[in-house]
Length: 227
Length: 242
Image (cartoon, rainbow over all chains, first blue to last red; front, side, top):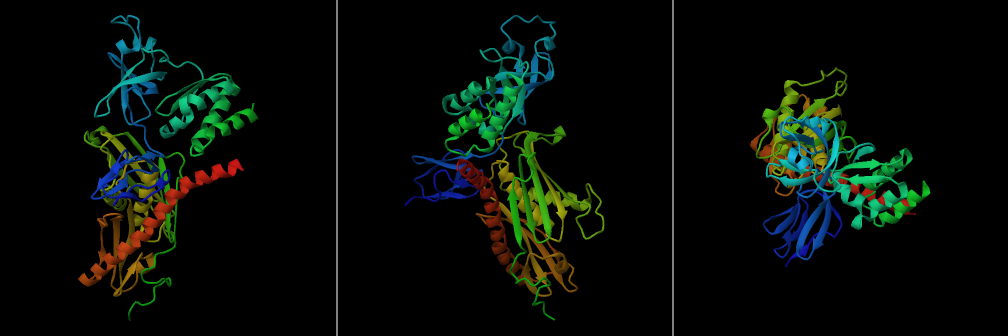
């Protein structure tokens, strides 16, 4: 007889027993040993059918293909740029993935992106060794000019975006800022000085209170008050 | 004379009063403070991040690096020279070995997780406090771990097996042994076992049995510290709603 040992949405620590018996299956961030399933990270329990997974409450960003991230140029190589990604790994952007126009052989690449520039880029490939390839050739992907960049824990990014982007569009509406959220936890805010300050405060508040249900209404109140 | 009454009046299996808190260093990816009696350890975890120097990087899995330091004023008045010493280097190494069996860095090749432990105040049992603090900090940083490691010293003072020796007991004028033990919670595997002094075979077996109970108490506190941090966020939310 299988039995669930923890409640849905409760906080568990690494090594905590989640379920007994063979009827449950270990999902993300959990593992089976003999007939028990244990958690592998600090996180919230989520049970869907027979699968138990743990949603981490903290932790590093794990690069995935198709993720839009914000990164900083750390070096220029012969064939492109090397980016810092706010992870342990740097990423490569090849010249042919950087721009649609023709780049001559002897052209100075720092005219397109200089060292220290930030850009909104998309991950097109991640190898088993976490080598990352980037592209900047799609709509919305570009070099960052003006505004400010703030950094949050990457595990809180989904809460900042909200369901179908509800949270982020709320902040955009109320502050009049352009906001781009990178999956790696870097966020680009561009607008008026006051708007940027307000948006930054709002995002930091979401990061701190990301557990709350009904966060959108709360944010509506916060943004309404300070308007 | 038999050692029947402990110098600080504790029962033989009683630990010193403990306190633990997660998330004390906001800059770090994960952090913890752990106090046991007068011994106090603060741990900060950074990473996974790029390995410097590069030759240390392992392409198969991430590495764990510990830095143990006693603060200059942490002893009983005599200034402790800051920075690396033979002793600090050894303790850093045994800490790495004690935590290695639980930490799973296979998803982060060529990276490093740095654990810095500082001890603002010391009264024996520092490596145990350091390991217990480091383990809370690692969990707080969201590093994948298959289990928790809890650590406490046991030993023998003049023929009596006791748990969690303080400095006065370690320097008791008789035959004394001090055995720091780190144990995994689920499997009860021992990941740290060192000894100073002398002990008989029977007493050693007795001491290790005692270590099982003692580390379990530390584990309960570690779990409480971690759950409190995130439960606190829940409560703050509730207060705000009212």
